Image (cartoon, rainbow, N blue to C red; front, side):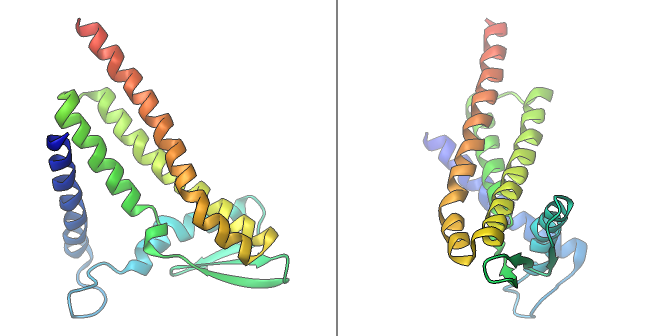
Length: 187
């Protein structure tokens, strides 16, 4: 357990620092000159969540659009257009980094084998983390659309961890089945 925690902490720290440096190398310094905000958070939120969320809900027939780190949708209770600010934590970026660090830590410490199947599960995990976050935010916006902002805030506070826990349970169940099959074949 100590080794897993050590590897996880190293990988998580590395991923957070590496993404900042990679962003700087690819896009240059954006934001203020103090060096505190290397990544333009509005751009990352817009492309990771705002634009895909607005596109998905628009495809379903809802009047939704995004701009910067905000989603705009109709509130049927008040018959107004509502602006919903999206924080960086809602974009799913941190969840993907935590998942990646935990998954790779488990591979390094326990499985000790990286093959095509493990790579497939890593990509599947990325995809599931992203889709579950998109589903979470879609539900939150739709609750705001039909039931108003008070209900939106309630769902935002309590739904996220349920969806994240659900996809993690499904993912680890599938992955452990795969690992179990590999270990059985080796015996």
